[in-house]
Image (cartoon, rainbow, N blue to C red; front, side, top):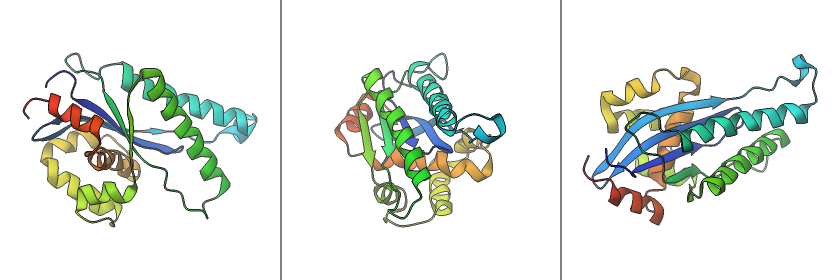
Length: 196
């Protein structure tokens, strides 16, 4: 792997945030690692205010994302140069808690990108689907199947540790990287990548 060819992909969510570290090359990509950061509302059982619980959850997400940006995942890997994120896609009918949680997550992601001086590139969910499926619609199972086909058996070990019901978030983070592929910052990283 060449130094300086890694991007961090994020599928933002307050309950489950999917992430991937991906090496980009002029002729392809390689998923290096993937996971899901999970948080859970526990204010009632702990007897604390909901706002304090949400702040703790936001800080937990920030700590985990900070590790991905500032700590190489292995001794011979570089740090990410770009953050690729699926844009916010809540419908106007989404409940207030969903909007509030997504706002908190986006605040964490934007602040982290600013603190790390990393470009933050977004793609719409439809762009991510088009990059993976060749069309702007499709379900979570189709995205997972297409990405497993794209990277073959080597992808299995990088996602099998994730609870199956949350795995789609990691796959959406991978799709976000592919959906952001035309952005200048991502193209620059791809050109630096050497050969796969």
